[in-house]
Image (spheres, rainbow, N blue to C red):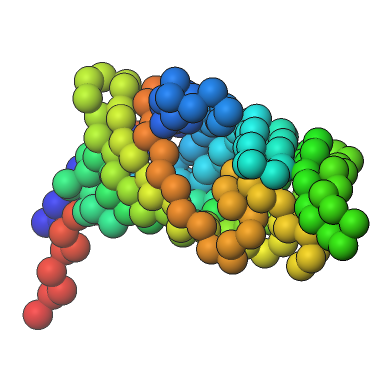
Length: 209
């Protein structure tokens, strides 16, 4: 006979606590992020993430501002066997496409030339950034309908919205726009609700002789 389990398929909504945690120590970097996911089956989920960034940076000779929103869409794959995950535990990898719409500019900067020191600025403009992500991570259910976990974000820049000569220093959802690759981490608190129970075969019926 076949071995089967009843596997709960869930809808999840979560918030990232890493961004607010960073803001407590660095008032120049406010990042807010959340996500919703929907289990297609016991192995794959559809995911949409969205967030907001307000970033300020000052050096001895320039100031930089970046503010805007971002969204990521993609899928998560659970590498655990259904009889191990049971809808409570997740250890796997996610794939994302990211889109960022933001305003960035340099209110003031200084540079030196033949005639001395010059002070100027670059007006804030609306830009659009594109990137992709590979996102391994883990998640575990702490108690009924409540989970916690983390995700590492390995990002590849497609376009930072400023061309090759005027890349944004930092933009929402990605990070340092001057780098072709970027990395980050998210810590999520997640609320789960079961919408369906699926019967999953864990051990196929042996073939007849």
